[in-house]
Amino acid sequence: MSQFRFLHTMIRVFDLEKSISFYTEILGMKVLRRTDYPDGKFTNVFVGYGDENANTVVELTYNWDPETPYTHGSGFGHLALGVPDIYKTCDELRAAGATICREPGPMKHGTTVIAFIEDPDGYKIELIEEKTI
Image 1 (cartoon, rainbow, N blue to C red):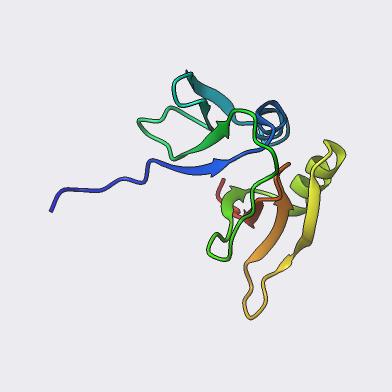
Image 2: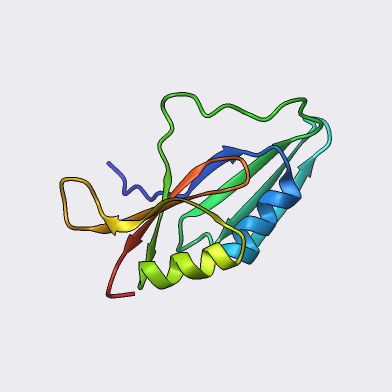
């Protein structure tokens, strides 16, 4: 069997520019590439912390002219980001306009310190404190 590598996670977004702003201005990711597909009436924007050849990224898919926001269903859980100081990070994210939906603290039944924020479409993003970053 060949070696596998996790490439990206795709999420559908209702307001593409608002989502790009959140992921780049609030979470500090970079737009890596953007492609419009006029025949399919959608746009894909890939954002992340580094080149796609070496990093896992997020694919924001915008279907042109959606009538209503998407539902998340019961299967999707969250994206996760490692951060060095979760309390400071949450203070900075809150000041930048992010919604903290679970304040930092030890996870239930464990000792790992986590928090959760939401993107403009309500997708949950878990922050996990990693002292080695």
